[in-house]
Amino acid sequence: MRKIIIRIVLYCYKYLSSFSINTVLHDKIYLFVFNMFSEYRFKMYPEDTHFILCFNSGVRFKVNEDIYKELAYGLPGYLACRKLRRGDTVVDCGAYVGGFTLYAAQIVGSEGKVICFEPDYESYKKLLDNIKINNFTNVIAINKGIWSCDRTLKFSTGHSSESSIVTNNVEPFNEVQVVSLDNELKRRGIEKVDFIKMDIEGAEIEAVKGCKATIDKGTNFVLHLIMLSKEKKHFGNWRVSFAA
Image 1 (tube, helix red, strand yellow):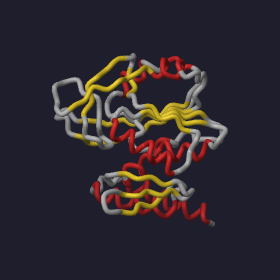
Image 2: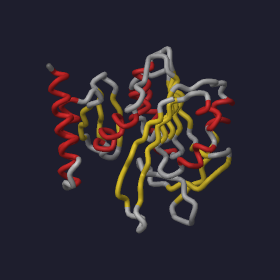
Image 3: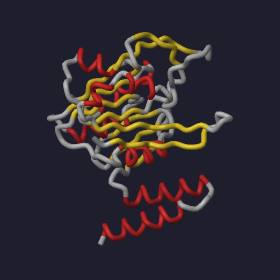
Image 4: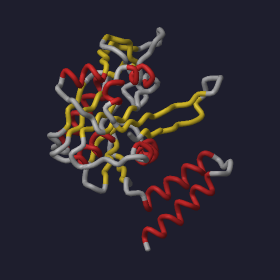
């Protein structure tokens, strides 16, 4: 009966979403459905200086900004074509403070591993704290960005989920080390990856150039695409899954 109810509600949501409705209303409908029925649902609690997010599995993490909507849209999109399995090797490019990393670590278990990359040092420190909070020993956290080759690049220092590599003179910025995913995995002796999630704020094209060998081995690959209008105004987010 529960599955039938879920299908009916999701059908109604998709039907309503086909109309040109207000974005705020669209989000409210989606989040209502997500909170009630999604297998990925979680709760968020505000504390003095941060938020605590808790998955139903018991995994929890701290974050300084409200990323509830971003994660509620993100998880179902990332896993639309292929769900994670116990024993998988997962790569998280653009881990931020670990929302997807921690979810993945719980699913793949001790037989699997998660290799996550976060170039922003402040976010990386919070990522390490969140891994420690959950006592995960199957996560390898790397304080580097992903690019087409190994080098250093300018990186905006917003310390948020939207920190990004910059190619102009935007300030403030730091220099960060970036690597080709193929090169870094080879250095660490990782020959096969089952799933790559990539959400790196516009650096995806260069990053894909540097992980061709990994993808060619049959890796399931997920991109978070941010679309801009000609006036460079943000008008949409898409998470596109490519299942091998």
